[in-house]
Image 1 (cartoon, rainbow, N blue to C red):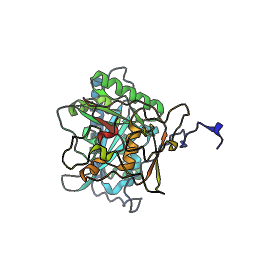
Image 2 (image 1 turned 180 degrees about the vertical axis):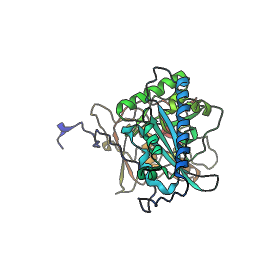
Image 3 (image 1 turned 180 degrees about the horizontal axis):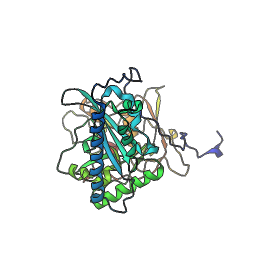
Image 4 (image 1 turned 45 degrees about the vertical axis):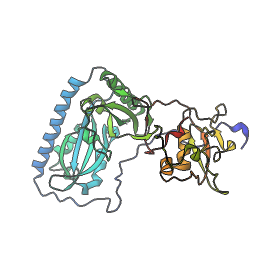
Length: 385
């Protein structure tokens, strides 16, 4: 390729966002779902659900009046939970209409008090859009389309912190502050995404909650990290109004490993690995560059195999993250090597393309951890210079 064509991005990314309809993550079975066989009184069932819906509406109005300032930027709405029969999973699509102000946030299954498997769907309903559900419930007895929608619903309630929690770990119950991985709703447009972010930032400042500046923007969510007690977050309605999911941050431990004695391998032993065999494959790491002078990388990451997106940049890693990812790609967790008293051995070569430049900050009092939104690697601290 002619030299004058550079710089160019190694990866072609479309500058467009597309929202996809909700898809159940379990395969098999007939996508049309089972036939409806409601045996109770539809009139009584509809009235009960309508009463539950109106109760949540009234309670939320009170929360808005007491919790949100007049200059609150985000779109106000209701956070509802729908408890439904999981056999009717095809009906979940009817709980998602972003353009209509209805946004399906998350779906999870649980075992009810009678040992039945149930599905809980958490939904954001913008102000003015509650009529979508009110009409369905009002017409439930006589309209066939409404019957298909309402029959599987067993209960409608107000979402709680546990409704938004989607990690496999137990919901934190510590009285001391903990870090939360917060998935914010994008909303209808990029403008509503920005309003949600600004609203959450303002609420964190007002409530004196720590919020990391770094953000990850996905097509339908913005992911942030904030520190709060469980009770503080549960009462922060101005924040929860913008939340789709809450998760436990995955952390890579960057603290230096404890000193070892006896027959354990020394740092110098790990610092003299053998080069990969001839003909070994290469792994290209697209990150913040690489500091190939590191003794564990110098023999497996050659200078001619390092590049940067912008020719004005150096190939060096000014953040540390790219070097760490190169190390993980080459050796995995070096603590395993230490425990087995084995020699570090890379099975492939490392290449590096520097795509970004930034200086990260680490949460925690001593800067000992760095939350990763996708990975849950734990690595030895010898990667840091």
